[in-house]
Image (cartoon, rainbow, N blue to C red; front, side):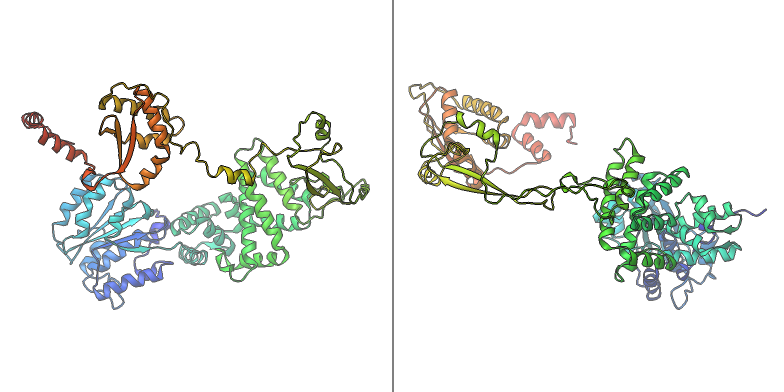
Amino acid sequence: MSEYIVSARKYRPMTFDSVVGQRALTTTLKNAVKSEKLAHAYLFCGPRGVGKTTCARIFAKAINCENPTADGEACNECESCKSFNEGRSLNIFELDAASNNSVDNIRTLMEQTRIPPQLGRYKVFIIDEVHMLSTAAFNAFLKTLEEPPAHVIFILCTTEKNKVLPTILSRCQIYDFERMTVPNTVEHLKMVAEKEGIKYDDAALEVIAEKADGGMRDALSIFDQAASFSQGDITYEKVIEDLNVLDADNYFKIVDLALENKAADIMVLLNNVINKGFDGGNLINGLASHVRNVLMAKDPQTLPLLEISERQKQRYQEQATKCPTKFLYRALQIMNRCDVEYRQSSNKRLLVELTLIEVAQITQPDDDVPAAGRSPRRLKSLFKFLVSTTQSKPAQQVAGTEKSLSLRAAQRQHTEETVADTPKVTVTTNTVAGPSPSGQRQQTVSGTMAGGGNATKPKFNFGTLGMSFDNLLKENSKKPEYIQDLEPTNKDEKEKFTQTDLEREWLSMCQRMKAAKPGEAERLANIKPTITEYPNIEIVVDNEILKKEIAPIQGRLRKTMAVYLHNGNIQFSIRVARQEEIKPILSPAQTFEKMRKDNPAVDSLVRQLGLELV
């Protein structure tokens, strides 16, 4: 019995032309080989199973080929090609960065780059999953990657380009691999099936290609699994059963039943699906994807967005002609809400059932019941009406009749104290007959301003809610309280205080401010007040913005310091620091050197003990 090799390895491409779905990229690499214009570093990035490592190996073999073909392919006849095909090449090295991601591994690799190739022109280093390298390993790799020896070429492969350092990206030629399309995957699976002598249905291969989600390696692995299950005869039914995939026919049926408002039939179909072991949440997600595809199939411009087979596209187009666009939009909204609520729901099946019932009722006309009883998520009747509903009597039309807006306001009227010159509001309502679209009577409210009172109507006093325009104009001349230059109340106190006392009380004030104004407290704590001409205090700030921010509270700062320093003659001044007064921010190393320079004892201690700053 011969050794079994999985299809993903057995049918791995050996030439650029055999690579599936990367035509533009392979053409660029072949032209680079033909013109001998090779970069020193390449980065191949893209989803899993699309041919990154495969193309890296083909490219490495073509680079060292002694007699490349006219279109840039390796000849497979020279000693370099033979040694590579037999796995004994000494010029091509592969490193798995996932398990060799330390600085020591990179340093070992760097030492190997110094040795020139024994056969061929280049040493090629293929580093797979390069994003797994540690930051220290990346930094150790930078210099060699930027200026490697003339005989070295690096090919880096990764599925997560965003995790690679920008300094690495800037030193490489970047090639982005595309996801495999369903038609390309199906064609490749057909080739493999014919070589292996396996019978197949086109529909079965389409399911495998859709399940692979753009990865050729995944598609070949699923193909091997389906071939083993079906004993060499891959059919649609066997693939669905083996992969435990919900048949797409269920989604088509649910949409058709929903258009006919057959909620009961959908409930039966849901029960059958759940009995087969499928989760209700997966059904909702699959149905949402199906409705999205139907929506895309309604417009020829969006039809290419569907990564499905041509046969499936025709089915979607046929159903799209029957589905109104509003129905599709509303169905997507309902199912998206269900997806959000599904994890938190304690009765998941009930949530799925209610969601499907709502979808089935989108095109159903409203029940003949008073609109006032309608709530936003009220379900319509599931079956035909068994009892005829009585039509509600129209509301009696009253036009121009004045009524009190609130009975309770009228009852409290005798307790209200009103002022003669305070404006009063009289509120009247006009009731319009018939229900409004929102389910409630429409009321028009009219108000009149009157100087006198009316005993039969509620009066509302707005005097406490704000100030009139006249009052605002009068008050505009007054400064707000926080801007007023508050005078200290302890003018008679004249106790002496020192710079230390000033700094201590200043920091205490900042601590007390943190509860109410943490931002201002933090900025004030970074300022050091100084005594200029006693008892005058000066505050030096870094810029005009900070000065304008502190200026409004200057009076409060003066009053606070006067109270806590027991000196009512304190005066405050604020100015912006001069250029020579601004001190640069020192790093820890600079601070350490300054300490050694300013303190000979510290410098002597450092030299005697051999201390270093780490």
